[in-house]
Image 1 (cartoon, rainbow, N blue to C red):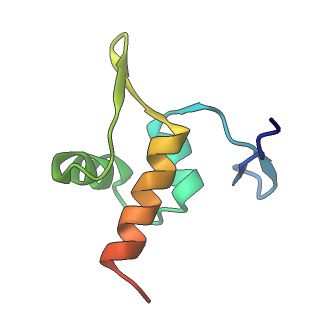
Image 2: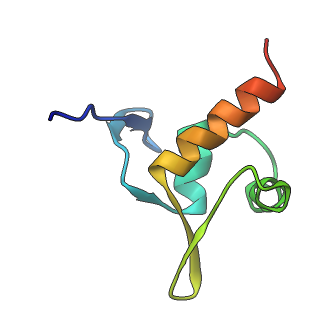
Length: 80
């Protein structure tokens, strides 16, 4: 079974395959969050239960399928 590759923007404006586990910064780039305080926005989404992190060591990370579900949730809450 062949799986499709999901791409995300890089810092220099190109694209690259998205990793399976993302950091806060990578989630912000993948979702194209354009806000002054990304950490605060992600915290708010976690508290609402919209974005599920995984704790790895001392860091919170996000599985790519959970980030895609998060985008689906945002779209269903704000259909435009």
